[in-house]
Image (tube, rainbow, N blue to C red; front, side):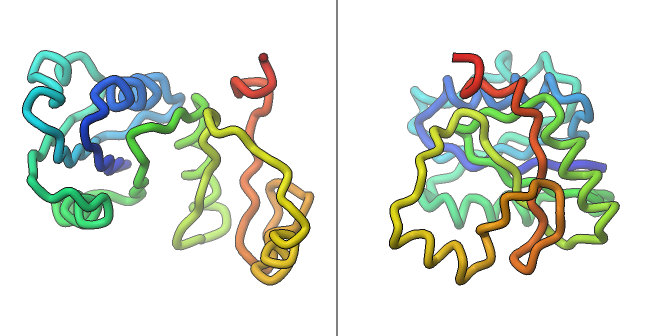
Length: 165
């Protein structure tokens, strides 16, 4: 069972967008847990949560901290969950995001992996950041290989908005 936890606050359009991204996944989650600390006027209504091919647990809270909201979401994860993904409410992900990360978790017996949000603008780091990249072994140009710092996940660059513009 695949579960996704999303913490959100006052961004209903972004939340709807990430739910649509999850709906369009080639490997869909079974359950999505939304922890929402939005003002009442910015919360999704019940009708907004009905038309998805996965179960949605919608938790309202007054907790404004995203980290605490994520922890609240983690406390509500089903015991049957085998793969857990934590996403921000303002990211866009490629249609094979969950499938590729799940495959990596299985193939490399990894405890955790991280993917790339396709709506982020990537900038070339300044020279002082290259030292940090080397320190944390993040300087591998090879995608999909195990490095000292973890696994570089390959992404389908054709499906990203960055290369289509």
